[in-house]
Figure 1 (cartoon, rainbow, N blue to C red):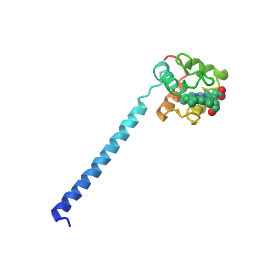
Figure 2: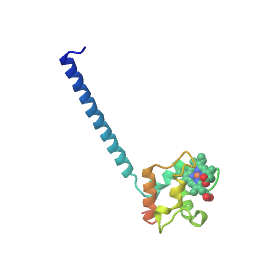
Figure 3: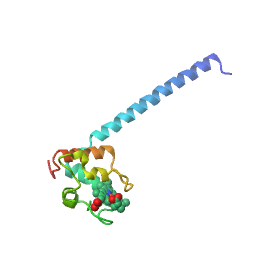
Figure 4: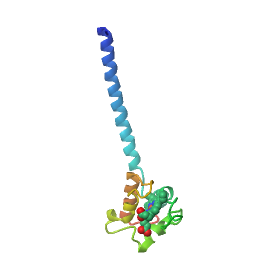
Length: 128
Ligand code: HEC
């Protein structure tokens, strides 16, 4: 049996632990959100690196389009007559489907998807 004093200490410790866990969770969610928002939509700095990192291991060595450094812009804007992006209805762009459909193990993150969408919506330019 625990004494009254031991019991009180235990309850206090439990309280402290749950508050601590809550604070930790809140903090990690906040930093996660911040990270997503800080991904910009500059082509050279933000967009091209996503495709080089996540897609160039297969494209074009396995099949087109070419997503290696230096080729990404032309592929995004001209492959299949420009079928990858839709400037009129950016959210319908086929590239957003293929970047998140799980056809490889390298889907882009939500933040990266937002960055690509924002880049298309802002005119899909090579430089700002
Ligand atoms: C592990 C290899 C692999 C990786 C990595 C990969 N792909 Fe693919 N990709 C394929 C294969 C295989 C196909 C054909 C089957 C299909 O369309 O799902 C394909 C097809 C495509 C197509 C359609 C091409 C066409 O002519 O219709 C697009 C667009 C595409 N991928 C974009 C991407 C993007 C964007 C990424 C990175 C986020 C990526 N792929 C990463 C293997 C890969």
